[in-house]
Length: 378
Image (cartoon, helix red, strand yellow):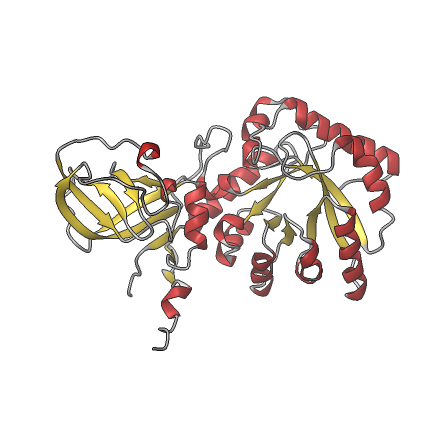
């Protein structure tokens, strides 16, 4: 079978194993997991691997990904992490649950829920310091009082987001605040919140250090399942696979060249001027390789060499490597591990094909959509 390049090789068995280890770990304190699929473009095969590992929900921030998974018959409840007013009808059609912070959006969801004869379930997000999305704690009771009057909308929980925009880590203090807010809401309105979602892959350290999780019974986990690490310090989690995704690219040039550009320098292709550009060291004549991969394909800063290759830089279409200690030939393959930004961009790129490889499964190649584009007419 032809192997496309560049490609990302995906081990579904490792993703499933990671999900199972994490589900087993967090369930010891009664915490269920939403498997977050936004970094993998809502790929149904990866969502199914998470479900086989024990996750109860699949969550994504793009309605298009939710629609893709729904069409593929994903069995878990589908949760939309980012609700836009303009997409309200699609949310009612495709998502089982959505995260919300605006009364106007809930009213629009209600309008379409009535039209589709559905009760739409929502989780209200609370702002606990990271300053991404959330109702301010002092406004939460009044917000929920208003929301409870909106027909066809059922509030099933509250949640918070941390360690994202502001980099505020989950701590005993902010997790206790979320638990306290849960109790206030439940007592004020005589309701029981099914879901209290305390955060994401950054909550691993809090989970291990805290004596109790209070009311928190859910986390939204993406990176830990996919890449095997927590996201406060980006350290591997014991027992998890950290190489479920491998990016493979082709060597298209291998030559000895000076290590220092020569001639009068001006700004580069991305507008970086010489006095702002990273300093380039003169290391003499070096063996350099170019791979067919650039910034249009992937966030190249998210590549981590498996062969201790130094990545010198990249343009739109090329990434330049110092290959002094490697004898690359034209057509050779070079593999890289990925961080979260690299994974997100690689899975989103139409120029990188996706290949599922597992010892007990057939290899399945999913070519990039760009491979099937017709040439423009003359």
